[in-house]
Image (tube, rainbow, N blue to C red; front, side):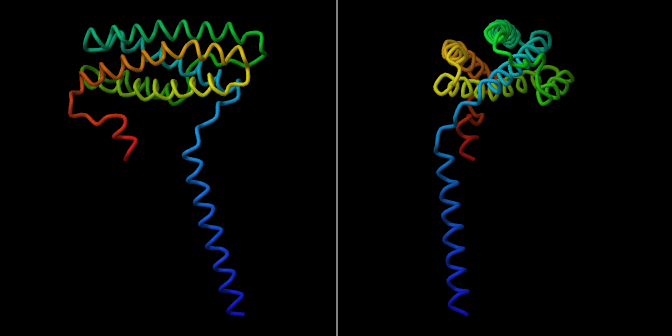
Length: 188
């Protein structure tokens, strides 16, 4: 009886260790592209958020640099959302008409901010969102199932990467050299 219990416990421990090992492997695997409909929805919602926050920052940014960058992102994402909507209009997908709830809450919170705190919050949120968007577009360009959407995502990547670099550069200039980097945050 003891031997059976000991064997069962040993087997359970081995299975648990194997499960943890398998979970660790999933973190190292590259993420797969979302299905086309999910990608389109997320891309449009993020563009609508960029447009909403860009309008806000173009008015409330405390520096000309922040207002100029906000206007650039606003213009870029207006074009991006128009192009994507036209591309998929014949694909019978339900398209969102505004940003997601999380970005709506962010916009309301930021609307109450002024000056340097607004600029820092705007740039930090844009850096994080732009990084996520670039990753999503990279996955779609690499693994997407719809050839038209896949090619379009690949075509948009250089512009999105340039936007991410511009946001990070301005954020770093405003925050100063002592701020933690995105890599530092990821390592924590």
